[in-house]
Length: 381
Image 1 (cartoon, rainbow, N blue to C red):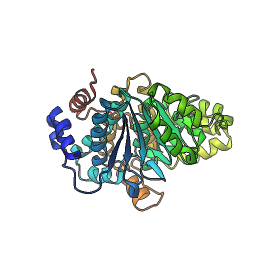
Image 2: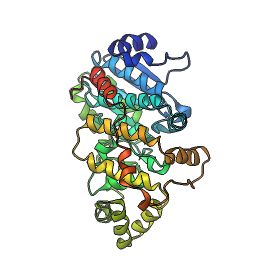
Image 3: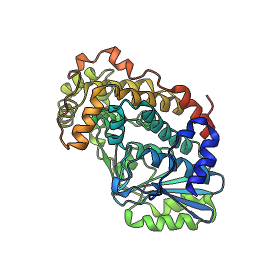
Image 4: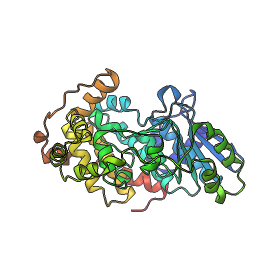
């Protein structure tokens, strides 16, 4: 049935989608369960912590489009207790980058962007259960769900900088909407937030103990009027949670990460002298100078962009990163060799020229991206 829906919906819309691989007979990466006028979409790669492959993203598009006009609500969840999703399949992307398979890179990032924009414009409510690891693209597909439920097991991060890469999946949008430059701190350090901190920082709308998730899900599915969904969620989720653990250092973060350049941020961290500043300096010194400079520019120029333009910009950056050595090196060392000593090129901030930075933003397949967004999400330029 899934294969038929794929052909009927996707390939009818654009010649580009004729290149989609036919789904194998293996277990689907995304399951759909229809329950009355509602539905569950279940990410189903538990052995990979729901790392998003091209197949996962294709199947998610199909499920979302198939349900939007015939259901009143969708719950987006995971078949894996440890993770909602750890994000993109970065090892597979690095392998494509090594082979200069630009088409594969473009296709994967476009499928991710279509999912994000579909959810952003979705006609019916989506409740995202962000239980466990919710990272990278995993956060991206949750970010625009009107109800985002964190638990004590939620670990949120956009850790791409650790690999000599950059945060995408609409990170430019949601990191620019945090208070006190928290988003800049998270993007440039790859630091994580846990549990109720995910709510307090604004990345979740509710906080629920994991032991209550089943009751929450059943109550939502049994609700006869989706206008009452918020009150149901409010009633089961926690009324009070601790203050954000970073509150005591918010002023330090804002002062340091308001620096207009990476060099200025580092200078302010040195002047700050707090334990947070010292720890952050040590962290930044381990990372790719190119990544740090590209990420900061990405956040700065995307501050006032609309979501579609952000997604297209991020897609360009993602594909262009694989023309440079750092993301290949970082992925190999950190994810495959399980080490933490990549050799970055160039190795110093002062060696990262404006030409290098700007080359990460050059257009790559923009016409194809815009056509796909327009034809699958009703986006208009």
